[in-house]
Length: 139
Image (cartoon, rainbow, N blue to C red):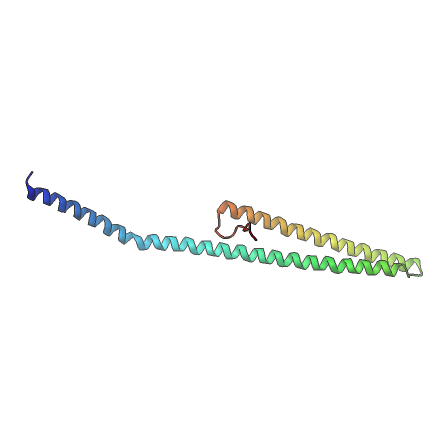
């Protein structure tokens, strides 16, 4: 084969490679934009998950505080029941104790609902593989 022809073939091959690389370079901004969009979506999901966790923890603490306050009321009512002089007063205190116990049960149910929702979110996030949304084992 003639050396000029061989050089032309090498030049043509180099031109094709240059064209392919230019196309790849031209497509990079679109690829970067798609990746950045996915990243922004993941960050938004992560922030939403963190906010939900924070709200759940806050609600749980509130319900636990409610339970503690109701337990203190029950203790106070039981102490008062030892000092009552009439059946009506005793029945009223028993009614108040019953009412407070019902409040405790409702608060405990709300805590359980919060925990179930958190567990569901955790499972859903694991399926989605949201980075950073999974609980760390070392915490």
